[in-house]
Amino acid sequence: MSPNPHDFLDLDADLSSEDRDIRDAVRDYAADQLLPQVAEWYEAGALPARELAKGFGGLGLLGMHLEGYGCAGTTATAYGIACRELEAVDSGLRSFVSVQGSLAMYALHRWGSEEHKQEWLPKLAAGEALGCFGLTEPDAGSDPGSMRTAARRDGGDWVLNGTKMWITNGTVADVAVVWAQTDEGVRGFVVPAGTPGFTANEVKHKLSLRASLTAELVLEDVRLPADAAFPEVRGLRGPLSCLNEARYGILFGVVGAARSCYEAALGYTLSREQFGKPLAGFQLTQRKLADLVVEVNRAGLVATRIGALKDAGRLHHNHVSFGKLANVRSALEVARTARAMLGANGISLEYPVMRHMANLETVLTYEGTEEMHALSLGQAVTGIAAFR
Image (tube, rainbow, N blue to C red; front, side, top):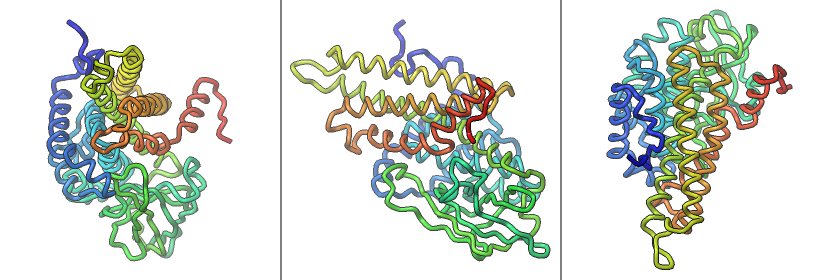
């Protein structure tokens, strides 16, 4: 039997029945509820966040790989497959789920007190509340240790001052996990959005990830009780552990974006005729299609292997760096090639390719730039840190 052009290496055949059910449920929901509207959301630079949260919560996607507190407790591979199917529609939708589940919820689940977990996780899992994650700052991106946001003790309280930037879901969040410098090192704080001194300003004029809500968080003398701080974790270990969870979702998610671009190019070149035959009948076009199917399936293999390592409890953060570096690079190359194959139609929102291409430029940067992941791999194979 000839290979399936849409899953050339038959990777999904090795999914468990539960993982396949999750794939099908997310794919069907995406096709019915998301795909028909995503171009409009992208063009408007808006997103119906509350409506989406309820829908994703109803599917069990929010914090789906976490245990207890209303979370689904699925395999890591199932979470990755869900990210893949969401990002096949748009990176902003995967980012929505990733920030909620792998940043805000994971931080609370891994580092929060029992009171934090009981108060917030069930609502976040159900989509009844939205969360965001405040780490990046205007002058502290790849070097989070240089953050200027600070928390000082004042009697029995904490007082926070600082600014966080490029915060997904910040304008709609009910709770923010904010990381700040203290006399004890970097600590995490649970900041309800209604706290006096806390404001979220929309970041406008984006040319990428437009179907995503992005904010600047400003904290001016935000006073929190002592128990707002995560009780145990100190230093960058806390926020970096959360970023690793989000990067895992990315390395799966971009396989979906790449697949969408490849399928658009395949369908277009089979139907578009020039010089008396379909574009897909020309040698140069077939060479490009061959390159695309190789890159999409190679990225799928990388994601599948890293998912298996995570489910087996053998995943190292350098594995995630490998996947993020390799798969985003592949997806971006697929998107750029597919854009050219569609000619002028490649820049139209009637097709997904230019939208994916623009989104992937951001995905290449966030959750660790390509350069930082390359340096992580360099350190892993040489034993020499080149960061400083």
